[in-house]
Image 1 (cartoon, rainbow, N blue to C red):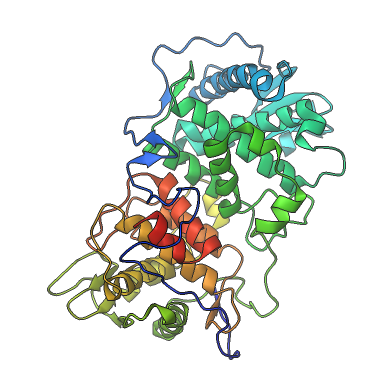
Image 2: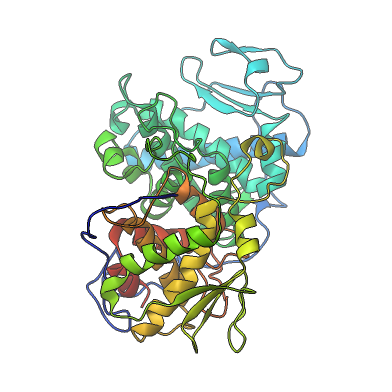
Length: 479
């Protein structure tokens, strides 16, 4: 995130409308507030996600497959997603499913197999679909173990489900609007969306191989989409663009909620209207990274004040301290203190969180010290939003307070794109918010006491609603 410098007066500033009561309906809720008790209509469940103990042994011919845990999950994922499409291609698109012709598991450190015009030695940290050979391949030596260790077994299923989605695109052809001129980002959005539709089928208990919880299990899936995001600053027009985490989670959730027909309808016009992937602004000398110090906290305060100026609430002050209230909530590294209308922050802890992600270390499976500046800003903004909600008479600790807070953080993020705001989003900022939002410790979707919404699916949806639609749906959807 960067300081926007001097600009003209704020135009089109966000308004927080009637947070304490009803407002115009937003989203698809039909005027009824969303609740934390469901995930796109499914109950919130908590259990260990992965292969079912009684899962059938897949009868598939996979070149190079081993008896290792990652290959067992990958082969089961191929069998499972094949079962999904065997059911849904006829039901949704009136055509029979044809199995993928070739499946390949490889270790780039030792295997030298010519695939799709390249050697598997040059395909480390990769999984892909090759249309001319009708082949799905995956790196069992480096990529799958890293995904398994960092995010759990469902991350492997996510990646294979995505690659299988590309195979489905080529089977659908014109029904998915796919031809030689289709840009990569459209194909990637469709494949992520198809993956979401497949996971809905799994979450409904219809998968013969896997069980996924709608809380921790789907959280793993969404977090893995952050890991395989494009590098910040890549343009959606680039030939190899796959999408930001913000864009990829949108497509996944669209498939989960709507189904494969809506996925096949994704086209260039749809992508152009909502995609967030963009190159860095010429003024962004830090390439999206800002040091978290007292000066930048001052910029953040002015940005938040500008975004919520029309709410009528007295804006809270942001003060450095221990990140806890002396006589109130303690949710370090930031806390909202209702009795003094202040947000107290632990500047050192937030500065550490604000360190940029080391992508090289990330891909080597090493821990990183931070998530990025916007992750820290969003934590502070969530506590600031508590003050705005208090100022308009909204409850700070009811069942939906956490989702309402995430929505308002998204609304503030959207406001920074408008002329006149003190801060401006950089490429990668929304991905940092998604990554932090999915952390068990995150305050972005927490009430004033730090009680967090259990399922990341709802957290991400709330943040996105605010970013795309502004603050009005924050009360209508999460009243």
